[in-house]
Image (cartoon, rainbow, N blue to C red; front, side, top):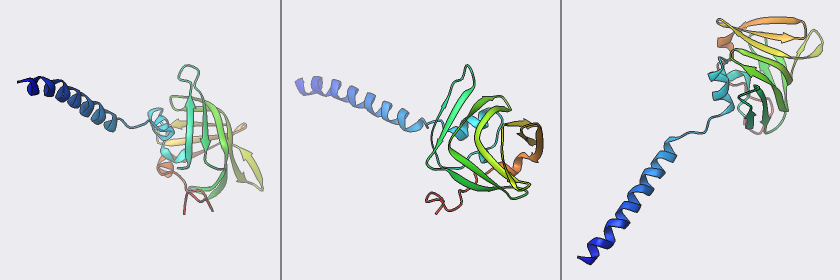
Length: 152
């Protein structure tokens, strides 16, 4: 009879631990790519080498840290783009502004991408006062960094 009284608390504790462990295993950490999706953007705006990010949900200020700086070829026109190790800006539903850390090579010069808007099935990239529109589907997959240890 006394063995039964000792096993009951042990079994209760064990079942609580199993419940907590299964609940923890089911929860997946939210990634920077997940945050992009929630706000109306495709994954392909960021390479897969994001090591951490911070988002202030009140102001929209964000920073994304990459494992290394990264060069990619952006579809559909195969523009060469570079991502700094740190990318910053302000994000809201379907709008990224004050963007810093992404540049694109066009017309024999590096241009900083200063903003991105999701507009219907398109993304509008802003470079200063100039903008260019591309289908969002071209950015569904994260671009692989050229020559990166992570892309090998």
